[in-house]
Amino acid sequence: MTDPAGDVPRLVQPRCCPCSVSRREFLKVGGAALGGLAVAGLTWSALRAEEARFGPAPARKPLRVKPVLSYEVPGRQPQTSWRSWGGIETPAQAAEEVARIQGELDKVRAAADFPVEFLPVASVRNGGEVAALQDVAGADALLLYPAGAGGDVFDAARKSGKHVVVFIRHKSGPVYLWYEIVSPRYLRSHTDRLAMQDLTYDDVVVDSLEELALRLRALGGLKNTMGQRILAIGGASGWACEKAPDLARERFKLDIQDVPYADLAKLIQAARADASAVQAARERAAAYLKDAGVQLETEQKYVENCFLLEQVFRGLLVKADARALTINSCMGTIMPMAETTACLTLSLLNDAGFQAFCESDFVVVPSGLLATNISGRPNFLNDPTYPHQGVITLAHCTAPRRMDGKALEPARLLTHFESDYGASPKVEMAKGTRVTNVIPDFLAKRWTGFVGEIVDAPFLAICRSQIDVAYKCPDAKVAENMPGFHWMTVYGDYTRETAYALRKVGIAWENLG
Image 1 (cartoon, rainbow, N blue to C red):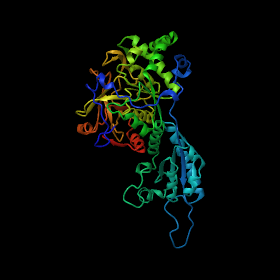
Image 2: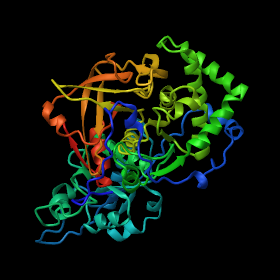
Image 3: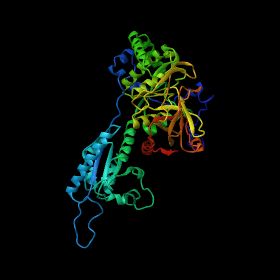
Image 4: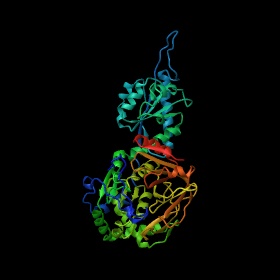
């Protein structure tokens, strides 16, 4: 809903502070029922039959890239300019360049920390030959190597409907014609301004395989996010923004599938009546607690119930062929059903490679999906505080332990703070770690963020997992550029990949750092 003045969303004002129970009482908006999925009318026995329920999450889908070399063969003419710039002007030189490209892409694939596949390198002389390439249809992106030929090659690549990345040589091999003219002749089309939106300055790479990998990593993350299915336990919502689920569907084409609490309650009740499932939960909880990095400071029954709830959630994910899940009303509704909180359960799912979020806040959920799909690492959905003296505290009760995607951080298992009930991990995130902080806006038009450093993991009277993050920009700049409410934090620096991916879906990005 919009106000009479424009497209500002109607905000639902929390009745108390942002950490109170009332802030979790979101408005339920839209969301398709599960009737179209394999989980419709699902019974606990059907969930228990899934062999994969304790296995890892499905892997990210690989980005499929079609490399295309364009070149021309000029003919010598007397007393006139007969060739353009560039070091490739014969079929033999083009064949050498194809081999060079293939060798470089083999290196990129071997070093990549994201799944990528390269189709065979094609060589073309004009746009018509690009359009005739049969395997372009199965690609996600075209990687154009414009050694020569005209702008119709670029036109044909864009008309394919695929993402286009342009790799140009200066010193990494024979110099390309388009090293000279890609900006004035094509990107600006003989004007002073960028002439198109689907191919921009950011899409051009000169010589650097690292820069190429960065763009492919971003596109791979975007591929895995666009149209992604996510289960919304208790419905899809948005923190103080009722249109958030619809905006998430619009920008990222998310397939949001509601799982009503009434259905979940039946599954949990059946799981609690299943002696073998309860025993499995106890055994898994005991194994978890034997980890020297885990300190139990709540009742063990809450931990065991979290593992039982994790079996239910994982079964739903497997049946629905989904990697992501979020839970609404996690500050109250789930507790009497599961006899615990969902905090540790969500942490376990994230550590297993799924994407699990509390609060069903679809203002921030897309940023979490994108961050994990780009980085291959779990993310920490958190509540920000107020920036001051170069530091901001970020906290929540559902942090993963496998924040770097590999090793488990130490954790204290406590009660969930606001309810003083259940099991919630206080993950001791490592000081000195660089983290990307993404700050989505309510309107899904302009996200901000920055790279910071964890300087402390305090134990304040707030949500259990908490970090002090230092940044290198004025406090006022951060304070004035904190749209929305929740933030998303992931280990490492992925700000440039985030910016590149967001541009493809029409969301602006501002790096505050």
